[in-house]
Each structure stands twice: as structure tokens, then as C-alpha cells.
Image 1: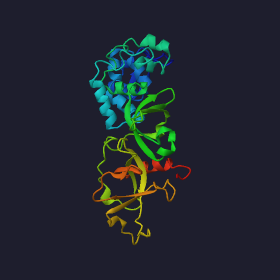
Image 2: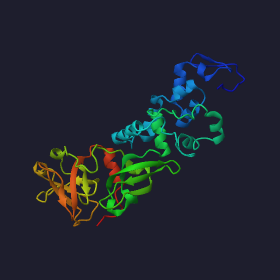
Image 3: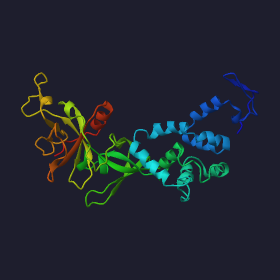
Image 4: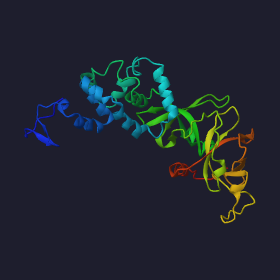
Length: 331
């Protein structure tokens, strides 16, 4: 891989003489590394097809870590990583081997550059052990190809159906590169079969903030510090056959308190009032109360069951919920 000839016989880059017959492999390691760090993912794939030396460099985890964090870091959490580890432990060789014609690594690469270029230059890539199954490159390309379904959470599931407004539910996601959106597969709800939502956009996704299964009660560790005005998420499910979703709310005042900050003692009470102001006043969903000292799952078949509580501590989390606020008050 030689650069094009120019009128100048050489040029200097940081005291390095580059001549017209010089190969990229003749560059000092530091210079070559700087070049590779600036390449996009398709550039790294192209460079990996040149020769075995560049192939070894271009699949380095530290190069792909940067791309993984930039594109996927916000929605990939520990649960997704565990699922990926299970995937690679259950397979031998590359995750892209034994796939259909337009699937796997080759199917993904055809989306990045012309087929003629692939046929002419990917002789070193089209092997069942490339990329290494346990590499970050392999994980990145698996996510991009849509072959890997990973756990995450979806805000306002089922296209913002009114019954799920200001909630966030666990789902398995698969990326659709053609539309830059996701397929979301939700777990069964009681007798209701698993459902799939298409066209889920990036801004409706997040990595699970706590490592708690949607079928398990989250152990609340913030109850004693909650005060009126604090933003929270609380687990809620329709009945005990359903998985939990996370619902946004705020801590409210007791009925005996007028809300005056100078006299408020709500934080000293064992009763914790939670408000869901997206619902109209008088709605049965507007408020609920839990016991600070002995809170477990509380509720009934009519109003559903309230589970664990987590305090929202970052402006980023709070602002996300505010962006999702419905245009009209819910009944």
C-alpha cells in the first residue's frame, strides 16, 4: 500500500522523511498507531484486509474500544456484556461463520463499501476465525449486523402507547443498520406472548441503571434520604405475573403539610408520598404512599404493585424524563 507520487520527492512530518516508494508499514509504530486511531470502523476493516501485519494491528481491542464507547456506550451495560460473554462461550470460531450470504461480517461489510472492493481485497478477512470471537471488533460488528440481541431498556414502550407513558421497560434489542433504529423484543406479560416493536430510536434507549432483573424486587437504599421535590423511579407491575417497569415520579408532601420549606417535616415521617404528576388530579394513579422503614412490594390487583425505588441523582437522567413529558395530562 504505497502513497501516490507527487511532484515533491519527499515531505517531512515531525522530522520523518516520506519518499514515494515508501510503504505504510515503513512508518514508525507511533505514527502508524496515530493514523489507525483516527480511522472510522470501515477504515479499520479496509486496512485489515491489506496484509497480516496490518490485520493484527487493526483488530486491536484498544482501537475498537473507542468506537464501541462512542456509538454504543450509552445503551450497553453489564447485562449486555454478560450476554455477549455467554454468546462467545457457547460458540467456536467467529460469530460470523456459517451465516447466510448477506448476513454476518460479509453482509455487514457490503453496506460499507462496494462489493468489487470486497472481492478484490478481503482475501485475508474471509476466514472463520476473523475477527477473533472474543475481540471487541467482533462484538462491535455483531451489534452492527443485528445478529446479536442484547438487553437494554426502552422508554415509552410500544410507540408511546398511553398505558406506558413515562415508563421504562426491559427488552432485548437488535440493531437495524438500514434505518438506524432498533427492534425491541419485550418479555411475555402474564398470558400475553412476547411482543416486538420496530423502529425504536436511539433517544428512547438506555442501559439498565441497576443490575436487577425485571422479575425481581429492587432493594431500595435511598428511602431515608428522600425529601419532597426529589426525583425518583419506582418499579411497578400490573400483577405479579408481569415483569416490573420503571416509572418516573417525584417525592411529594404529606396531606398535613402545606409545602412551606421552612416548616416542612415530611422527611422525618415514616410515610413517603410519591406523586406522578403526568396524571390529572383525582386520578387513582396520581399519588401513592409507601413506608420508609419497611418498604417491600405494596399494592393490589386493582391498582397494581409498587416495588423498589431509586433516587435520580444526575441532571441527565432527570432531563431525559422531562423531554418525554406528555403534551396532555393523562386521566
